[in-house]
Image 1 (cartoon, rainbow, N blue to C red):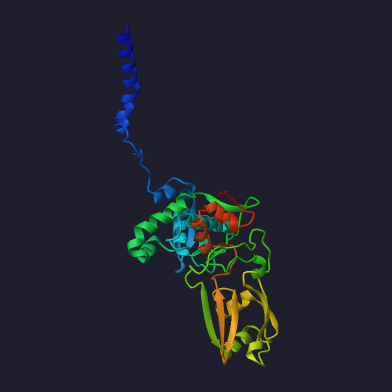
Image 2 (cartoon, rainbow, N blue to C red):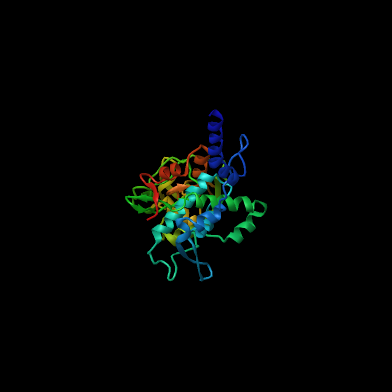
Length: 329
């Protein structure tokens, strides 16, 4: 009787376990992980995810229009806009911001026959895979995969406020904190307000200088502000600075005329509106911190947050106050 029971149990085990062992090729060794065949990340995003099902018509610099999937477009934007050596969570935040910006432009009809262009001054920068890989040399394989992962692992996600994709503005580096949209453009946006940003002197060219002669400065100012009074001591040409807590210039009087720090930045081509000025003889030196307009997500700040262990959702909801990471409509 006992022998019959034992044989029955053996047959039962063979019936259920043998197919499993045959399929898996035998039991796993201690510490071994079961392998699963997956598409490469750059294929997973474009072949299976929602980004791969959406089409982008991209206006190129030569005037032609290229049609590509949203996944492939986002790869080119992230590669162009953020250093590929950045932390993966920062790259993912950039991918979501880029996707959100694209979504916010849908139906805007800014470009005839195209959804968006590759000019960063107008829309977002974009670089082809071939050009990016040529720039990366022996890092090409690693960087290509990292950016593909950033896009694929955030497939279909955007940043929204009150149910709509936001204006996901971003810039390079902040001088301790970002700037309100109100300060730069004179229009308040609830999710584009000043927040602390953790980057610093690890950023390349974080502190920069621009020196111009008094004659050059006078010419530039009078072209833009013809009624500015640039007589008298040079030390008095810029006065009554109003600074943000970060050091960004809110307003300053130039020759008696009140202008914004953003206007001075544009006038002189400064890297940011966080500046001070010193005068030596016939030269004026502008001391600048950070790079970019200062509104929205700081890219180097995002990388610093990622190094602190923050996720891409942490980064995005920090820089875009009150916004949420949601699925693209």
